[in-house]
Each structure stands twice: as structure tokens, then as C-alpha cells.
Picture 1 (cartoon, rainbow, N blue to C red):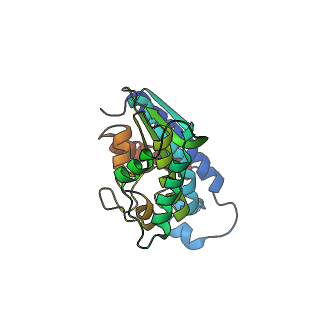
Picture 2 (tube, helix red, strand yellow):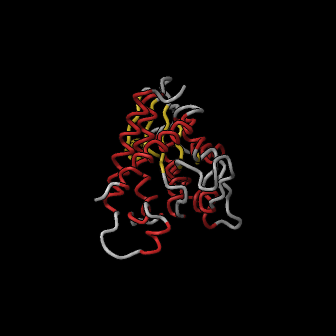
Picture 3 (cartoon, rainbow, N blue to C red):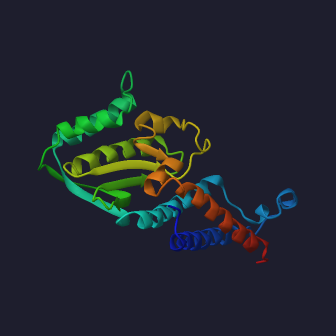
Length: 249
């Protein structure tokens, strides 16, 4: 099922608003760039770095994910606080697993099923109060739960380690419920359908199972057409942004 008209309009309107604001904030106001102006006259008017754009777009993708999830599922909430209790043994085992991945000799390899099973084996009702914040919570129509922590496609080592810890923590806090937690990135920087080879992510996360990249993330959140629909919407918004750039300040 494609994104419906309402969803497409909501995403397009949101993207145009945030990207046009970004463009206006980063338009060059001082400094001559004679070669830039001649080689790329449109882009030369906007001063931005890949890092700044990726950082800002991360929050955009979170909002887009919520809009998509709202069409396909019963509920979708951003910045969702997951609360529960965890036994000290389970908390300690989460720390042990990620430390073995970080400093083990040899380093432990991530295995989603095995890692979660180990934590749940030592988790039982009661324990200490604990909470973790999820970028996106989705309640499906069958009442099962999905939690996503969304990062840029090149997360640093600390972020990858924490994402694994949070996946295991949510599994413990929601034991007895049909709940799955994931790390996610909106696109694959190595190319759609190509292996995701980011070293830190592979060190801590079971790629394709703990961490969903690009098309597989959007397919789980929506359906098999969602990723391509979003590319089409982005193309349309890009044309509108081009008009904005061609308009004198």
C-alpha cells in the first residue's frame, strides 16, 4: 500500500518547512567565493557542511518516521519514555555483554537472539526502577510494540554501544510483552541494497536485526513501497527548494 495522499502531503509540507528554514539559515551573507559561484551557482549560495546537514536531518527523519508509522499502525509517539523495573543481575549482564564487545579478547560478536535471551534469563519481576527514552514508539494493531533509536548512518563508538545497551534494556523492561527494540538509520550511505560496513555499528549491533538500515527500516515501519515513496517526495520538495534558492534574498 503506498503512502496515502494525507501522509504524502504531511511529509512534503514538513520537509519543505524544515529544509527551507535550514537553507535560509545557512545562506552565505559574507565572503567571496568566485569559483563556487561559477561552478555551482545555486549551491554556492548556501554555506553548510555534510556534518551539520546530517545532524539536522536526523531530527527530520524522526518526524517523518512518526508520520509514516501513524498511517500504518495504531499509535506512534516520538521521544517516548520506556519505564519499568530491572533486576541487578540483568543490568549487570547488559553491561557485561557490551564490555565483552568493546574490550573482550577476542571481542564478543553481536547476536540479537542470543544476547536478548541471556538478559531475559536473569530478568524477573521486581528490581530497581529504570527508564530509557526511545526516539520512536510504535504500537501495532495486534498490540505488539516497536521501539526505535534513530541515528545518522555513521554513529560513533559510544552511540553504537549505548544503542545495544538500550535494545537489551528495553527487552528486559518489557519482558512478558510482545516488544522489540531496534537501532535505525534512514538510509544506507554505502548504497541501497549494498552491505552496511560501518565498523563501530558492526562491533556492537547485529546488522539487519539489531540495526535496520534504509529500505529495511522503512519497510518495517510502512511497507515495501515506503522507501521509494519517500524518495519521490524528496525529489518534489527538492524542486521547490531549488526555486527558493533561485529567488533573490
